[in-house]
Image: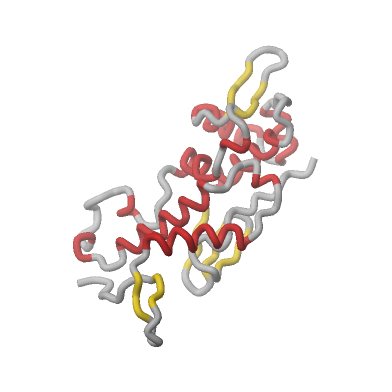
Length: 202
């Protein structure tokens, strides 16, 4: 069986992103990526999701995914603890999805392995930056973090079994940023969504 390709969401934040497997490359800016465990965990979930009634052992999943058995066993325990898989005991035991693939979203998977989703540390850990009280970018990074989270939350494991169109992802992220970013005036006088001008630091 061919392992499903895990093409994580492209065009999450701006319309000028390209996707390289699980890496999100912002051209000319920086690179964002999920952890290997989150990537591998998604791959294993996709194998299991292809046959809802089948029960998969760790050995079977290791063979189909081409991952090392100890790595697969570790990931399966994490996914079971995260309540996305159920472990069945006995001679015919193994692993199945705990809920339907349509009910599992990418945000859940990433959170289980990588914790809370945020573009900057201050999104989830307050008062750890000396510049936080005067930061002109904090609010906008919060909007962008919400756009990333919203896209991941709106893509199900079932959808990941098929190729995802970039325009479907970008339309969701644009909708989030339009709702949250303040309106600013362009040089031609038209109102557009975007960050307010300001100093980066005091």
